[in-house]
Image 1 (cartoon, helix red, strand yellow):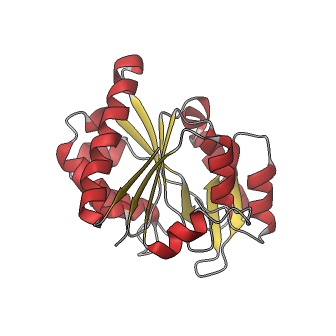
Image 2 (spheres, helix red, strand yellow):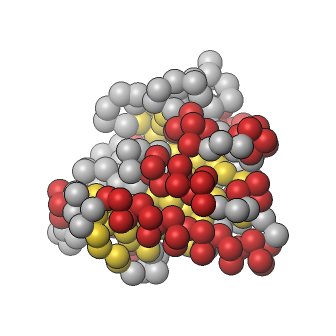
Image 3 (cartoon, rainbow, N blue to C red):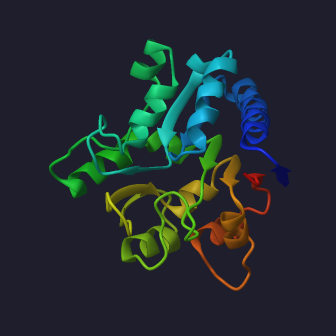
Length: 223
């Protein structure tokens, strides 16, 4: 399903309504909600409005789709972005699982993250995705060996990858974990990304998600 909007404000408001409706179904079924969030410029306003409008935010367990291997206080941190969008201090303290626990050893850190993300590996109700102009999603990039492993592996887990730009060291949910979610919502804006998304001549990470999950919900704004 694709919903198109002329303005990003309409994408945000309609997207939040769709997120809440999806989470309400999971809450009724499981009495809790497990959500994996992406970073980026578009999701920030979405998360702020979600924080304002969701009446059961204390029942949501937030994790990350991917992260830069940086201090959680860094301006590049997705965890910091999400924390800054939430107002409830108890939710910030108890309901968010980041991806950086050992800043000195990224391989040891990966083992910790894999253990911490066991609940999401067992069940993820909702994944929020974005997409780069190169067709990457999460931190699964074209032409990166670590991303190739995350892309091709049938293991539902977390991987270390390398981005083409700074900060290069990344941590990401693998393709199998992302595509196992009950609901996937992709947010993109701008004609350039729309063209990449619909370019059938290429096989990019975002195309693999769409191939595996024909029921993905796409929210697109022209501006």
